[in-house]
Image (cartoon, rainbow, N blue to C red; front, side, top):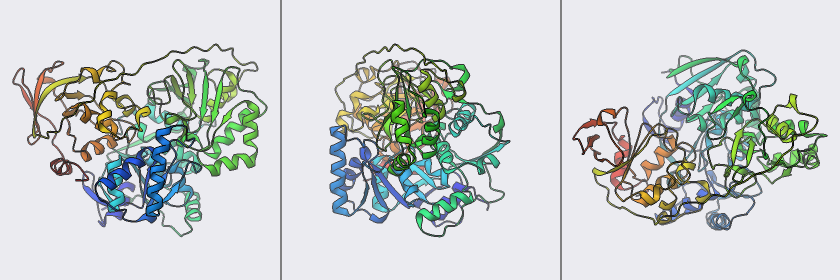
Length: 602
């Protein structure tokens, strides 16, 4: 049987000659990493369950979320992990190293066809070299560290072929924003996407990283780019060994195949709120900005720094505008130093930080304040993700040009005199509520419903990243939905035994376990949605927290705070106010098993 790229990688690591979409298999994990915010919980899970690390040579810590040491809780978590690593002889890429997903490529730990898991939801960035990377919650990672394997459901594959030549003013970031404009946040939900065509073959490693890094924002499991000879040579040099090229088989079966004319792509920008809210940059040109950010796992590469230096050389950042630049790894930082880029950045008036993830995590370089307008090269602009301001996503070229102009623009339209600027700002208050708990795990659940008619509710809306250092589940409930407009008082209104019903792609975004555990803390019994983000689904299943999906429940005529029942064994959903019932989608076999034993680690 002919296999797609993802099927071939999973088959190679599962001991099976053939795997098919929908099958659940255990696969060997070649690289097992935990970051600083998730690492502490990974260690606690191991210690609390009496588990040992299966193979320390394949196990790593990467401290990239807070490399500045600016937060006491982060510092405490990092040191906790350091102590564990010293005891177990585990390699740490500490705060001076850079972004973990980049380092595993730079250090030759990940190679084409390999498997990588991390507490980083953008571990699928490894698709840039034709490897399978997957972000996971802390229970998942603890299990992988202890067993060396993890269960996976083989995803369906989608093939995208680019025809034509990429326009000269269209950068890799523009390519992925054009794709988001076409496919949105859930058309490719749960799929492994493969890219083909001459324009793809010609992509550099840095460009591939930019495109693959935003698979999560498209709802995809991963964007896999077949490795070129140049990529194979890079990986062989870094790993110090001869490698076999990984390719899909001729005649492989795809869920969908698309042909796209890349010559029709234009410079794009994502409006604040959602990465898929992308548009031609002309639609927002001359929008006044307060700040610009160049970096993140999406655009912190040396080629990105080169483009930035070319635009900034001999120019100054607009008065009142702040430009923050963060290379993705220390190696790239030093390349910038050797090339004279750091001097160019500083002479232009930019702030240059040490390597790391930067503005995607609270307390780091790149965050913005209430009312602040930022143009950013990051991968997410969810409300509150990079701070309390508004974030437009763009390429490094557009971000650098806009920093000089004082408003959103492209390199070919930088004015001789920068726009004048007057800053504004607002303060915001969080919601505080007493945490709640529910410990029963019935097969028949009854409760009042909260209907949240919204798709693509991301994990920052559910449990914001400023609370990621919280490890006590009892403290989590009070912060549930406090970053979701219209629902910021949810924690105050929720009652033990409540049920949440919502739309598509619930839990999109990061790998944080807290976005599941906060509901358990409040006493919410179950979440029923049209679909779930793939990492969120895993986290809920592994925590034995019931989640179910439905296709159509309109005939139940559910109203806010109706009382319903759901039978987990039959998947029958009943409106107890009217007596009407429908059958929704069933638990998977792995979900039943984990639910019955009370969690993945039990």
